[in-house]
Image (cartoon, rainbow over the protein chains, first blue to last red):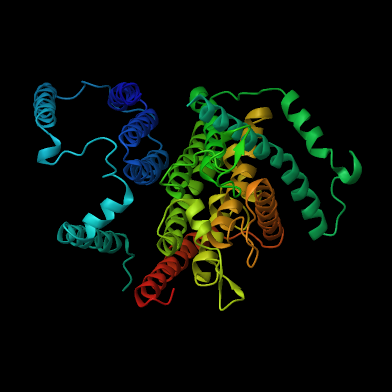
Length: 166
Length: 349
C-alpha cells in the first residue's frame, strides 16, 4: 500500500515537475508546481508525517504559490520563453549540475539508516509533538536564529514597501 | 478492513448528502431572511412559504444552456468550479459532528461520527485544503478573460491570504488550550464548567480569538461585509461573471458548503461542539442522537448568524479591508494566543 501510493505520488511529482519548467504558460507552470507540492505532501502523509504534509500544503501551496499566481496575474504575463532557448553553456552547466545533485542525493539517501539519523516510516517522528519538542529542546538555538532571520526579512520588506514621507 | 471501508463509505455518503441538502435550505433561508430583514416578502409563490423555490432554481440551473464564452482559457475555465466544489466537499471529513464513541452498527464499529477518525492533524487538514480553495477563485477570474473577473480574482487572492493568517493564529490559542489538533479532542476539552455555572467553552477565556476567527471566517467565505471579490455594484459578479448553468451552480454550492464548514468550526472550536453545559452526554445511540441534535442546532444558529450579518452590514472598501486584516485582526489574534500562553504557564487555565 505504502509503496503503491509512494510510486504514484513520485510519478506525479516528476511529470508535473517537468511540466512546471517546460510549459510555456506561466499559469500552467505554477499550477504544475502546486501538483508537485501536493504529491510531496502525499509522500509525507504516507510515511506517517501528517504534520509535515499539512504544513507543506499550507505554506507552499496555500501561501507561496498563491503569491506567484498573484504576481503573474497582476503583470499579465501570457507566455514565457520556450525551454532551451537560453544560452548553450547555461543549458549544459544546468544539466551537469542537476545530474550531480541527483547522484549525490541518491547516494546520501542510500547510505542512510535509522542508526545514523534516518527516520523510519510510520515512526511518528513527523507529527507535531516530536517536532515541537525537538524545536524547543535540542534545536532551540537554530530555531531562534531562524526566527530572528524571519523578523529581519519582515522588517526589510516593510522598509522597502514604506512610502517616502518627508 | 472491509467493514471499516464500508462504514467509512456510509459516513461519506451521509456527510455529502447532508451537505448538499443544506445548500437549497440555506438558499431559501438566505432569500427569506434577507426579505425579513429588508421588510419584503421574498420568494413565496412556489410551495408553502416559497419552500420549493430552491428546487425550481436547481431545475433552472441544470437545464440552462451550458455556455462557454469566446476567448476563455477552456481548461482552466472548466477546472476552477471543479476545484471549488471538490475542496468544499472534502474539508468536512475531519469535522466530528456528534458523539459516537463505542457505537456499533450491526456489530461493526462506527469509530465516532467523523469520516476520518484517526487523522491527527484535524484542523490543519482543513486549513491545508482551504488553501486550495483560493485557486478556484483566482483561476476563475484569470481564465474568464474579463477585466472584472480578473479584478475579482486578484482581490480575493490578497484578501484570503491576509485573513488566513489571522484565522490560523486565532486558532493557535484553542490548540494550546486543548493540546491537540484533533477537533474531537478540542470538543472533549470543553466539557465541564468553571465555578459551577460558566461552561468550559473556549469562547469565554478566548473571546478575542473567537471574534477574530469569526470575522476571518466571513472573509474566507467571501461573504458581506467582505464580499469584495464579487462586489456586484463594481465588478458585475466578480470572478464568476462569465459562468452560467451548473458551472455557476458549482461555485454557488461551494460557497454554501463552506458556510456550513465555517459554522461547524466556530461551534467546535469555541462553543463546545456537540456538548451542552451541565448535561452529560448519555452513552449509546440515545447519546449519539442527542449530540447530533445539539450540534445541528448550534450550527444552524451560526448559519443564521452569517445570513443576519450579510443583510445588516454594508460592504467595506478594499483598503479598509486590508488595513483591518493586517493592522487589527492579526495583532488581536496574537494578543489572544499570548494571553493563553501566559494563562497556561501561570496555571490560570
